[in-house]
Amino acid sequence: MPTKLNIYVKRYLRYVEYLLRWLILEKPRGLDFSMRAKSAISIEGNRGYALTSRKAVENILRGLPIGKGDSFLDIGCGKGGVLWFGSAFPFGRVAGIEVEPHLVEIARRNMQVLHLEDRIEVIAANAVTFEHYGEFNFFFLFNPFDAEIYRAVLTQVFSCLAARGDADRTVWLLCYGDSNAAVIENSGCFELHRNETCPYRGNSVRIWKSKVGCHWGRASAAPGAALNGDSARSQAAGADVIADDSTVRPNSAGPGESALLTREGNQSHHHART
Image (cartoon, rainbow, N blue to C red; front, side):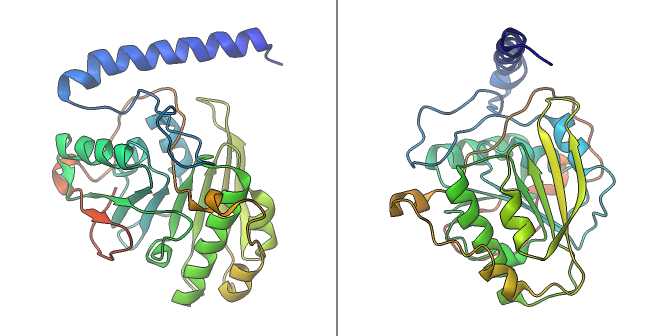
């Protein structure tokens, strides 16, 4: 079992790696993915941004049935690292939602530098009140906010899926790191497809697959969960992910195939995404 000293040493080395990557590989190109962003979080309950590595994202998505009819949403996309890595898979649409304006600006700039602005959509929105979850069927969450907000976000996701009313469409919840498994289980609509530890970072990976013919109306009510905390805590929507390693191996969609639609709030617009 790793000691506290080993954990701190690994964390320090990872931060050094991120700094070097930013200085050598990103900053000269006008990119900013690796540097953490936790000090400027304006909404209580958000956990800030840290990069999830390409290898970690590829490990999570490996072997899943992904095609042009599938849409991927990173809930709390931060600077857009997961969107970039996920865009290598053949999703028909790739998007992320983020509540912090400075992170939205960085993510959009990153996609423009990578010429992915037609492929990847960065949406400025609150995850608790976002009304367009029904447009997606792959949802990525890497521990972006505390348990109360996590529960409220899942409740909103289920509610939007219920409004869509498509019981035959397969929905995937890709939970990296801490996740609110009880709410997902209690919905009665998901079964655990994979439960493992990420070989690149040591975070838990739980992938949930919707059951055939799920009654989303019951699922949206199941979490039951009016928030117990102060209403300000329900205003959160998203930091991104933590990562470590990055070697980019595009799968199908490349930088030239995409572009970032910048849409604010709850405006609805369909297009290809990362």
